[in-house]
Length: 408
Image (cartoon, rainbow, N blue to C red; front, side):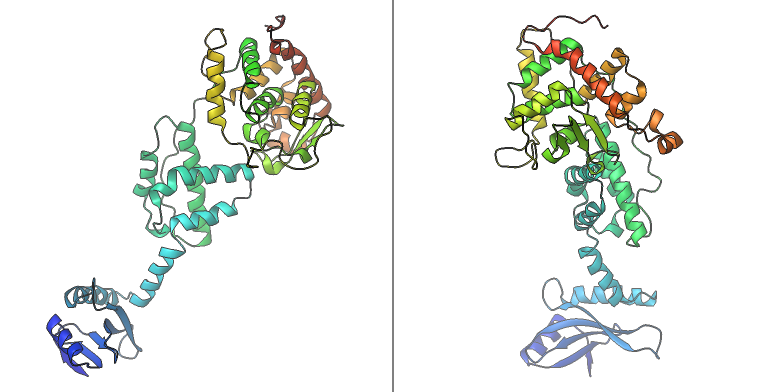
């Protein structure tokens, strides 16, 4: 077993002489070079974990050539020797690094977390939050290496005005790291001790009868999917994703009922939405018949994909309203149509419990113990309320804007 100073000169000489075997450095214990019959050269470190009684092991630093030269390999050998002196096995540490780089890389780990999110509504929030805001920052960084400062960078790069998105991203990341802790992939969440972003200021925007009529009339000049979606939002008070993803199998024209499964609702609770006359007419127009299909999505683009161009459709309808000759309309969102229905119900004298049942809110009268024991579905009352809403708003949808109602 040859010993000597491992330098570029000695390595070149061994290669030139077609030597085979080991050359051990006389300065760093265990540091050596292995040369094969084929002339391949690699740097190694021979060591024991646990004293003379333990088995001798070898750690391969790397093959001769960039980045491993006698100088860089010697520095690496010193670093590994210090780890060994501290009781750290370099072979196991290297395996752990490889595992982290592959199995615990954030981007790939996030895919597994998303698949574990069973709720469709939550899954959508997870997908959007990770794709738009988190992955561009954390990339493939191993989960155990992610620090609080890395998470803070995610929020630093988000627009300050996106208050709701910041809270959504915070909730997604907090659950992801807790999931990782429960699985034993990390010891603790880097978000421990981080303050939740401030809550979204509650919106109080709802559309007046005149504004609602103008929105309704202009929907007929927008995309063939967007227009009916907006009209159903006005008529049913359901959420945007719930309406845009509705399937024909959920709808029953004979019973005038839309059965929304819990797998598609925000709170996981199913909802029965009676269909009033205007809602039926909207769906008849989409089906182009009074007999509806039994399966398939109600709203799909020409390519068969789900409709997602909400922002474009909203900008178009805003432009059309701005050009219709009426007074300027204050900024509004599609979600404000849901609040408009709730406000309209209140003006019509609809019971609070019925309004919550239509909106599928698990709060107020349906929260806590009351929600557990109060399982009445308010089916008849919901049908009556949505029928009242139908009769009240219909006059405002006429081209001449209809007669004004006496309700304040």
